[in-house]
Length: 223
Image (tube, rainbow, N blue to C red; front, side, top):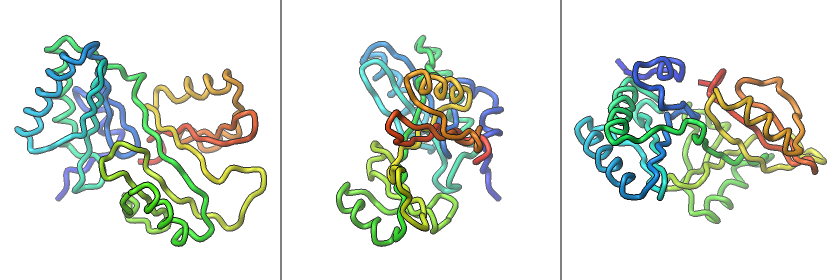
């Protein structure tokens, strides 16, 4: 028996309006406006997490607090995340702190590799990252992660051959599903080019003026 839920179920959950699913976790960014108010919110989050025995990742900055919640035992979101998200949002409202959903984002780095097992140890040693299995148990997509969870995850995309005129390292920029088209439009307006929207709304492939590619990604169609 598991309480695992889908991204759509989390999004439809009561009290999750401040939160956006990004990859397999839910993120919220609260615009505190001051470090002191941020500390107060973090203290409230700490108390709620201990009471629920469910502990999110919390990032405290001068003007904002970002919170990520997911359930390690199910490799994604669970009903516990809805409950914790609802309680954290309520605590933020009590402190007169508003959510900033437009500021939610995450980044992963994809590396094309013909011989992934030979390439991966280099990056693992260089960055001091830990190897991890793909969250769906797929060995074909090995990943490296920062032990502290602060820096972008690196994943290795299997390639059959080297392709000329295409960068072999690209960024996957994960944004809330309701911000994706706006982000794509902003990139195009900034001089970018839409390579393909064939896979939208899961991801859009874009390129800069010199052909370097990046993807704008959402959970839709993925999780």
